[in-house]
Length: 298
Image 1 (cartoon, rainbow, N blue to C red):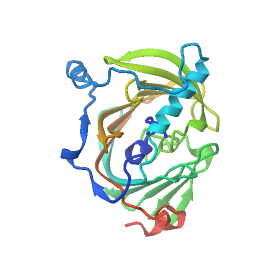
Image 2 (tube, helix red, strand yellow):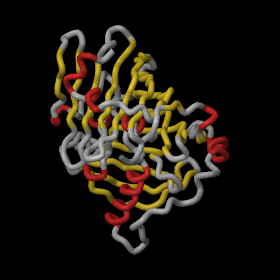
Image 3 (tube, rainbow, N blue to C red):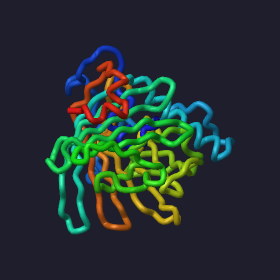
Image 4 (cartoon, rainbow, N blue to C red):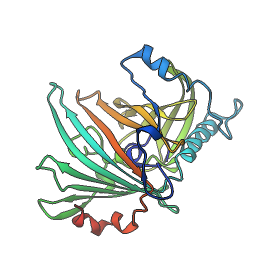
């Protein structure tokens, strides 16, 4: 899974081994704030060197270099085992009104398949008990289910409906799946400076059914962390932009954005996801991530 995935980015690719909590004393902090460029440059002084990318070469085709970068970003995220975190989702309409929802999230890495991710809504009362499960797959559509406690019903999200809004947010069901390398054709567009950070710019076009015609992704050259992602609708118009920020490193290896802001340019709305309380190495059982277990989540 590359660093640009969404819910995956919240609960993906973090730790190994026995259960333990990574506290403030044990993690390296790299705060990325778009609103303070001077501070940003100071804090990012460690991300000026380029990442070592196998298969990347100046005389390669744009497609070969794009794939090489995507594969290396994916490789760096592998091996975490499982994780747990808490999430806050804040929805803003075009008039500045907001609504907040609190969730918990878990992810289990599957060695022969894509990751399994579970979200559980805890507050407010009108959505409490709602659960969302994703089984990600590389070369085929993800499996996704939504449990609605008021109806006591598990609803399968059809591939034709994955462009729909997730729980009223600016994130779609598709956004909450994993950005597996195999799901896209990749093309290297060149280098770009984003807020003083040297980045690789990639275009990825979906190989499977999608609500997007393409995505443009900026990854910093040092760590291959997603800095910005633009989503274009099926008509080729810019629909949304995702801004990951406030990265922290865990286990001296895995980077996580603690904030993701999705701005919808067509309706003026935005949604902010914020993560906290990461725990890794829990040895979560696979049965917790089965469809029929959704009714039993507490």
